[in-house]
Length: 239
View (tube, rainbow, N blue to C red):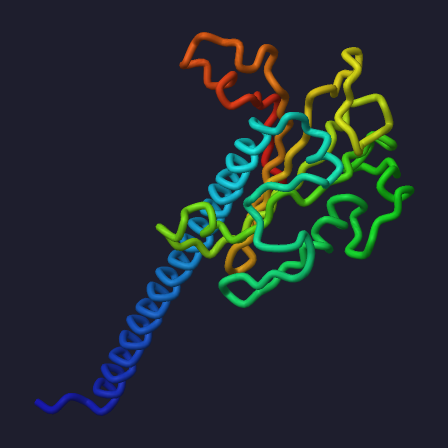
């Protein structure tokens, strides 16, 4: 018995509907997989930028541990050897994007890209509420992270480290580390380590560090704080 024409038409419509459904399901699965891959890639890059910032921070802590005093770091006259030239100008990242070291420093000191006046750096704001004791950040280190590995590994990240006087000081002189024992910020500096990577990846870490009492006087080889000559007082990731 030959199927009725309407039954053949119904079967064709049903088959086409099933094909469309399966196709849509396959496309959806492909998009989901692709999205998850992209999200995972961004997560990995973000975490890598945090490790890059921490590596640059550790490098500068080593410099602080051997500095006879920290005034040269606070006033900008002493810099780390972890640099790739003058402390200014534009740097090009591995993906072709750029960062301007001068603008980055200005943003840290007065929240604008152009030059900062003393009055602007001393202005009390939500981010810098200490007025005359606001840190005047100095570019102490800035270079591709590859420079830390002596070319034994390749990294797409560029690291920048800023150092400033501890804002808890009370001498209203952010260009020198306080020497008065009654000054709560004496012997303490603030450090900000930043890492820039591909696709806008960025992480920043801020720490305050101090010289531990009796540096070099400990007979305990395992006393790492005394070995490196710095002690971390606070640590936070800047969002």
